[in-house]
Length: 154
Image (cartoon, rainbow, N blue to C red):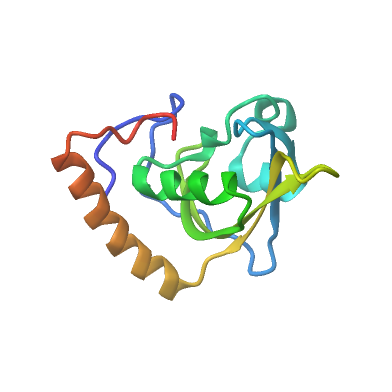
């Protein structure tokens, strides 16, 4: 699917990075999606070190094969205080990609105000990857037909 666009100055390559079956990637962001924490496994899998991740938008690992609408839905869901679940293709620092089954939960203060988000990701099943790869391809085509850009901030 990838057609040569860069995200965060990383050129994607068509090579999948395989996650260990028991891998759990954890990250935390503020309400604007800026990374405030990334566990060791997230850093290992993404290829970035802690200092390269913290303070950066979580979209640093966004692959250009991911349709804009997926992230619009994600933001609508978590900003409303709900949990988001999805299958996501991410981009490593070295250009390879990896698929995760992602869950994002809002973090709330004692008054119920959202103060940030925490995400936990595990390896996506092959069935989920195949289904979503096909769906995302159709969504990207529709996005292109509308003249929307993949390489934006959502």
